Length: 224
Image (cartoon, rainbow, N blue to C red; front, side, top):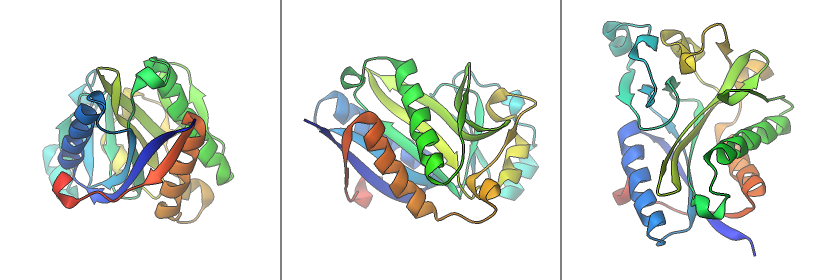
């Protein structure tokens, strides 16, 4: 029997608020109170530094970041430095890995598979780069992936560039990888892409890859 996965479309919200919500959901998932859950959202402009991150990979000074309205946060996820902002569809899956193979590398591979299949729906080809989690379009990264795991329950996740302001990536060395660029769906397609449609398609593909029945739910503001 296919298991349920709840989907919440949060719109745009702050990084700290989304993090607090994830941690609450992780605790409830560990306790068996809720099924697997997928949060889909966009962030206000923010640069995050992962557990292995190097602050030196932030190239812009504090004045530039303040002018652009970009905040900086440390994050307890894998990976190095990345950027989140409007026009980017972010997915935070809260999954019990006891039910998904109990293998962190496998779940990252499945996140990549979700994005690759999603891009194919829009006529775009995504690929993997060995040793670097995420999805690439040619020599440019289109989706960053970095996760956290607590008692075999996942949080953090992936960030797909849809209509993202790519100029903001020039303020960092994305994921600490030099010599490779960053791109977006809109740049590759030459047109703006419907972000709400991408989010809906992403939830559908996620269900197919993870063999989950995706069910949309309303999230009360008191939980944010």
